[in-house]
Image 1: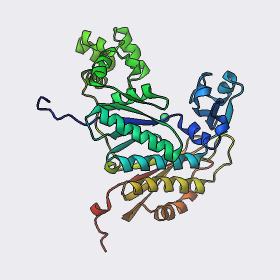
Image 2 (image 1 turned 120 degrees about the horizontal axis):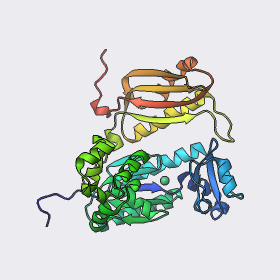
Image 3 (image 1 turned 60 degrees about the vertical axis):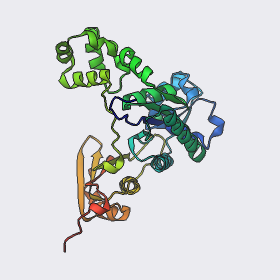
Image 4 (image 1 turned 90 degrees about the vertical axis):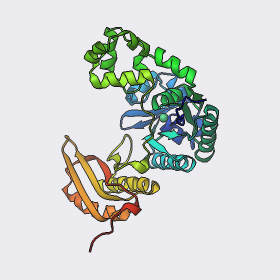
Length: 350
Ligand SMILES: [Mg+2]
């Protein structure tokens, strides 16, 4: 029996395992059991598990990675393929579940729609099987009551697994988990808390609230107490409820032919429009922030009287403005704004 409290449904945190590497390995099966990594610019974007065994990690310089593992195979990010698989991944999420909040291109929080842990786990396993069958990559799934718990669960689940944090596990975690394992708490805060003897979440109980507040600020202190009490974020903000969508791209990459600015702008506009369209949304504005070598930034903006998610409409409006781009251009960020559903669009006045 519930004490008059309606149990909320459990959340899934779904996260692809070494996403970029997995996408490449679909057509390079001979590399599956050998150390390989995908490179963006001069940095490791993603390493497979055999490479990780040598200490190769995402974010590391390719040179450092090679020093750790001489036989490491480096492969350039197949940008379009990765985008395509990401879109397909989110199509599957959207078909199987009502509320999906993207975390990144290969990671999402999903409302499982059930408060039964066994059923939520079964839904997670079905999702994992479908992604593997249709896309040829593995995703790990964490099941938990809040986003933090679901995310901690998926970390335990990796690679290629599923893990449920039950109410009993959760109660224990909320006492024993080290503060620096808590997602969203910065290194400086961790260090300041350590100095007052707060190393694990449960240590918060033994410190006066004023002291915690003084050490890490009111906002952070509140956040920590919410996590300790179990009232941390458990709300899914699905794409459908967003008012803007953003994507970024760069002109050049490690070992790759340069894109020209027009190609890059078109590709980025197409990507955000596709995402809006998939969520059944149209936009009234589009902004393109252009970044030049040396840091100069120029923002191009355009509004359409008739809200649209049409790639052609937005490209036709923005492309001519590229003449104002600072040079040489290194990257750009495209944002669709004023997102709404077509039924909420006011008819254009004429
Ligand atoms: Mg991932």
